[in-house]
Image (cartoon, rainbow, N blue to C red):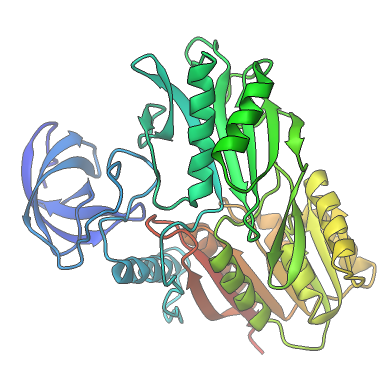
Length: 451
């Protein structure tokens, strides 16, 4: 088996897609990843990154086209790092995501019979994002917004984005207009100089919009900024400033100031109302969020006694679980999120939910030792999945039912394997397409004791 060399031109038959939606072909038995190539295609590709176990190549020509190839509805596709699947028909995107979940559970989790259901998709898989974070850069001496190119901080300037709700792009355009009119210097990561860093915008189901302008140092020309956003964004209800003086990839610094309008928006999810601040975490696809949470609800039978919601965030799933149980307890290590969760419970009149701030690996055993015997545990961890100590605490709790909400098939499979070693069996697997046009997928899994 001879590994290909840098700049070598290859003719490849693409037979699969990788976890980041790259086409995979083979050259003399050697795996070659080709972004934007699709299964069933024959392509020409130039090797740009040779390696010992695989190579990466740039697509140069499609010799035989897949019938699932679609025309991307965005002129920046392929240059912008936001979307990776816009060239694939939506039906094929859903099947790819179902297969990725199934493959991870087989390969990493070791599950032979994987009950993966078809992925739940959208009728209209565009304009779904209700939150956008646009960095700013300079092009031809003027301020521009956009997204970074893949694996870089090189700005790809945009005037539109087909997966964002229109009002969010309007916010970016208004800030761009203000920056150029007032000659606001754009922040430069290499020098640490300049003021304007990001515009972060979000909207709610009522059509109200929040705009957060992030600067390095003080915000100049506040009055002109407020006027530009009020004029350029129908539905603007909240204008905030965030100051971030650190040389960091993090978007927000610790200081927010409301310049005009509301401090928060209000979002409705499955009939419950939630206050949404600038720093709040909330799923960014409202239509699919409801579908995801309904899947979680469906796995919780009526008449439960106690439910523990681990990694509960602002309490969205905890409050839904409280409808099915006598008591629901959310555990979260971020104090601000716990405070939001308590306010959301009060706002919705949910009296049988409470929240604990702390590490679930310690707090869940402490809760159980106090007499709280969970009939179900809900896990909704970040992308890295659960620490082994958390999974051990779930097993030790004796909960007969575990509902796991995952945003990464690989860590989901790893954690399900550990739960199986603790006596649980995989009962159902439901992918939900929260992020159409990208390789990301959410999954709701039910595991229960082998009894």
